[in-house]
Image (cartoon, rainbow, N blue to C red):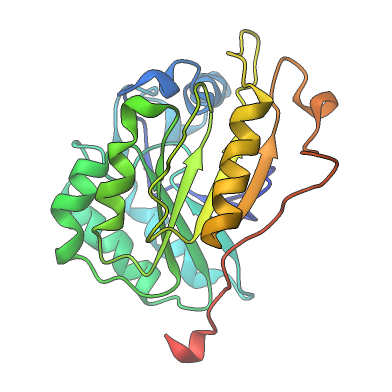
Length: 242
């Protein structure tokens, strides 16, 4: 558990760690870089490195200890639907989320195929926001698979955006996050790509969140789009209604 500098969440919770690359958006994976750093610092949880996917049973107890409602990014250092995460452990993670309706859990995957395969066997309470990462048109199919799931709140993380995404299928989508790539060798994101996505969201009445322009100095590049900061999010459902 850790407080997060990610603009669209409050904290991270990592019941699994480690991952492998599946598409071009993974090229400069921040979690891989962070894992190397944490491993060199001697942190036990990351001693196996990034390419080994590990589950952490002890981490399942953590959400029960939070006293106040939280917005939580689940598995910022992994992918819950990676093929090496056993289904029974995914069920355990979902049980924890189901039993803590006071918190919002944001789950993000690039493995939309496995998500769709398993979604009927999982309990989808309103506090579980399910998203897929889509960096360019080659992986737009992830959106269609997400839309077919039983998740109550669905979102897209279009980050790092490395290509245009016209004609997005936003019919069953509640939230769209857009961000450019950062780091030492970031691939460029064209402003017209972002403007087009924002306009698509406005037309479809979908909450739009612009995270960053990215680049080598993402703080200097900022978050303004057309002179505005876009911080829209889906409505958070009261625990009483879950």
